Structures are given as structure tokens and as C-alpha cells.
Image (cartoon, rainbow, N blue to C red; front, top):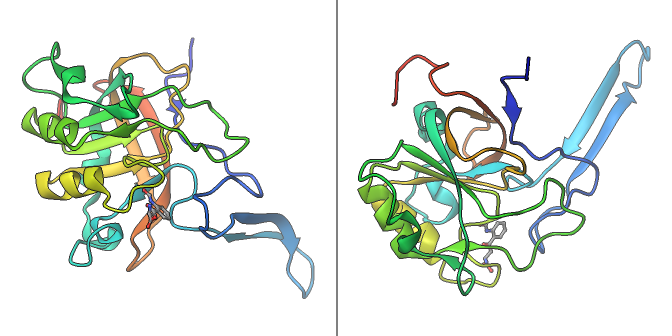
Length: 217
Ligand SMILES: N[C@@H](CC(=O)c1ccccc1NC=O)C(=O)O
């Protein structure tokens, strides 16, 4: 029987590539405690935006909610995985033209990023703000992407982030969707329970659609 759990999180290894200028990711496994040496303990040092992570609205708006003010329900439930193609670096609203008028509340975009990043991607697919608005119009409340951001690397205006804020859409970035079939699944995404932060690394998995209670919500 095939494993019903599809892990769509990036595995974090020492030096995992991060956004340029962001805090380097460091992990030391099994660094024993000084006294007694009776157990293995680890130590991690991470940006809130390492690998697979969620953005809380405070990341891109000073008045936006911090992670502990965002409920978990947006990260749990029915989602649609969709392979998309960027034109001129952006995924546009026409991508959704042939899809139903109402979509599941969570939309995960497979832009073709590899399962592992040897280096931080420079030229990834970002989102046209009009795509965000069109997805929201069809009922989407969470947009996930295998890109490291919904805006291009060099953006100073963060137009797609802002469109998400205005449309009430939350953001999940840096997914690993390689080999994942398009279609409907149930998403379980649990960001680290950090207080007061602008985002956090998350473990995200897909389960067969209908596994979670709550139907299509
Ligand atoms: N482009 C922004 C920086 C930025 O977007 C960013 C910086 C660190 C970690 C994550 C970032 N953006 C993620 O979507 C700037 O240059 O100010």
C-alpha cells in the first residue's frame, strides 16, 4: 500500500539556503549537555523564513497580525495542488480560467522548484497580484507555493504579499511539491508555535482528501 502521508516540507540541513542576507540556518544534532552527558540534545538557529514556512501578515504590514494571532484553521483542511507556469516571472490570473468558480480554501502552486535547493533560487516564479485577487474571489484563503516567496527576489514593494493582505489570504512558502499529483488533498501544516513573530518554519503534509473532519472546509 502506498503511504497516504505526502511530506511537502523541505528537509533542513546545516547551511540550508536562505533568503540573501537573512540569518544563516544552523543546526547541531546531538550536542550533549555539559553535565552528565546522559542525553543527546540539539541546537537550532533559524530565520523565521527558512525552508517551508508561513508568513504572518506582520511580515509585510506593521499593522498585520503576528503568527500567534493567526488561527490554525487556515492551515488545516481541503487544498488543491495545481501545476502552474509563470510568464515573465509571474503566475497570472488566466491560470485559473478553466477551473471551477469555487475552489477549495487552500491552493498550493507547483511551479517546478526541485525537492532540494543546492543554492537559494534567484529566478523563481512569483505571483501577479491579479492572480491573488482572482484566487480569493474563488474562495481561496491560503496560497502555498514551492517558490521561496510570492514576490520576486528583488521586489521592494511586495505587491503579491500586499494583495494577499487586502484579500484576506495567508501565505505558505518554500513547499516541496516535486512528485506530488495535482488535485485535491487535505493539508496539515503546523508552524512552530513561536510567540510574537512574523512567520515560522512549518511541517506540512498532505493526506488523502476527506481524511480530516470538516468536509471541504
Ligand atoms: N525583498 C525584500 C526582502 C524580503 O522580501 C525578505 C527578506 C528576508 C526574508 C524573507 C523575505 N521575503 C519573503 O517573502 C527587501 O528587499 O526588502
